[in-house]
Image (cartoon, rainbow, N blue to C red; front, side, top):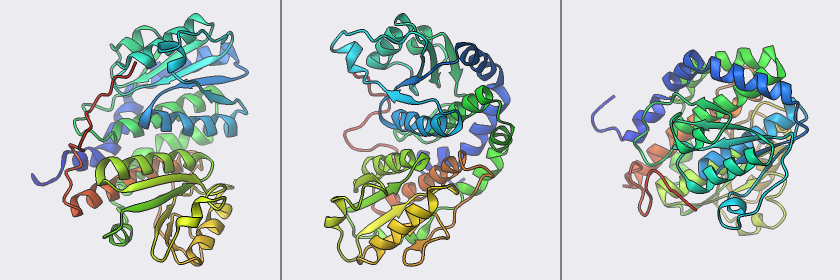
Amino acid sequence: MSASQSQMRREVLEIPVAVDRLLQKGGADISRAADAMRARSPAYMVSVARGSSDHVATYLKYASELLMGTPIASIGPSVASIYHRKLALEGAVCLSVSQSGKSPDIVQMAKMAREGGALSIAMTNDPGSPLAQVSDHTLNLHAGPEISVAATKTFVNSAVAGIWLLAEWAEDDALSNAIRNLPTALEKAVRNDWPEVRQALSGRGSIFCLGRGTTNAISNEAALKFKETCQIHAESYSSAEVLHGPVSIVDGGFPVIALGAKDEAETALAAVADEIAAKGATVFATSDKVQKATSLPAVRTGHALTDPIALIASFYAMVEQTAASRGINPDTPRHLKKVTETV
């Protein structure tokens, strides 16, 4: 790595090592939490998170519903921190996701959920944080220090910890094997930085990000990172919704990136990508099923539920270089700081 690389770039390239470290050191925490979930056998779960961490929670929502048939509902931290209300969560599981584990509203909601009868599980990069202290179980992300304001390896390790927890709970060997093989897949993914997308963004100020199912969460994260690191106005939509109004602003050359895993939703997402391309947009899709849109090379992981993790790794590599090409330092986005503590 050269000295001229941004810190964000260094941390993106560290993703495979960070995931391997989690897999080597996080097993005991995962097993204990999965055993507790199995004993609880929840009819539903809830999630507590904000920003990138909330996108992890959205990914886990789809994964839980597809894998176990157990719904996950996102609950607003303000219910506890601002409105001081209590929720009846007896028998539920609460998943709290926070890189720092310090935001007061996340901590208060996790504490309230536990007091309301939920089994409280925290995913954080700081096992000594306030969030960990109010939770029944803590999953240490083992991501290592993350200095750049833009979350990359902590996002990925949060997603890996969460999907690993679900795989252990479900006792799903195929998914567990794919998770163990993630470091190898991610080594390829972080080098797969989609230069054709960077070129299409030259001189453009807006983009649509599309997903479907588990990749809807990845689309949300992509849109956030475009805004955060590149000062590009980006909107995220499910491919099932983008034709219901938003597509009206698409004109010639309007950039669109459609992020698809190799699952049952891929065909539907590819069809929408092609339909938007036919309207004159410049559309890229991580699918070989497109005909009018441009197919992006995507690293597949051997399981549909882990494919989104490789997709976001490649996206991070691309968006960091996009920021650099626009003369923006992705390590220090304007108006932002590393830890945002909301009440």
